[in-house]
Image (tube, rainbow, N blue to C red; front, top):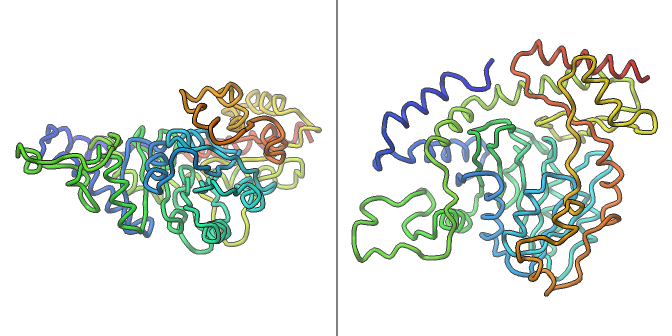
Length: 395
């Protein structure tokens, strides 16, 4: 199969043939939102330009603002914690579970203060966090949960599709994700009040957009007396070209996800019996979407670099390391937050340094992230064979 099919090309050509006429522009985004909400078992879906601004918009819709604390996992791509800074709030990093590598329930509880306003759990590598436990904590403390499911399309948690539990859930259509439009994102929710806030925040605060209406019309704006902006908003709306590609990808999503699950299964099978290569734990009732297949390497046996180099030498595509933990990135060391460091300094002595999340610090350098987006099964089989040879070499 191909990552991009004739369906994507057909929809894009329809947009181009319409020449972005006002009467038809945004029709693919509108259809995308409708079908996405249905696919993920929610009432409302609001499309945006990427999967970072979706988190920013969700935080703003939840009322998160200056001086509020938001708990985020230490192990994830930094967009999660950056979105907190966009909202003028303070990222508080929680450690990870030593086996699933999702956010630690125990550390969430330890990190809650009177200033905590929200929690952003991440479905890391395609595996949901323990969302029921997190929702229970949030209910006890009056917090909002915003799921970051950028890496988890069609994953399941205790029989529910991932993204359908929290008040808001964010997805990414970035080029490497399960479905893509090159860039793009989506927030889903069952709450009509949140849906309206999300729409208006991402649409320049226009008062005439709402639950089902994502853009203003000519009739809205032609009157000289039309009052446009009901609130401060950003222009986070995607183009219909992106909407067209994303809609086609959504309609093919089951097969796109199946490709990754199949590749992950082959890779995991290749290392069965090697106790020094430990895959991400999938608890009972969880179904991993396998954005990538990840192993924890016993680096006392072989270094991360030596394993990767041998894998490549034998014909492997390469191996990605896990992201540097967010709070150990240079921007946190230097507090280079584009002026927001002054806000943070007003509300406490926040230290972002080693020792903050010891489990994540111990595990992160050992993680081997393997690609799963092999659209030709023969390529996936080859990579699994190379992985097995690499493991045999060092065993």
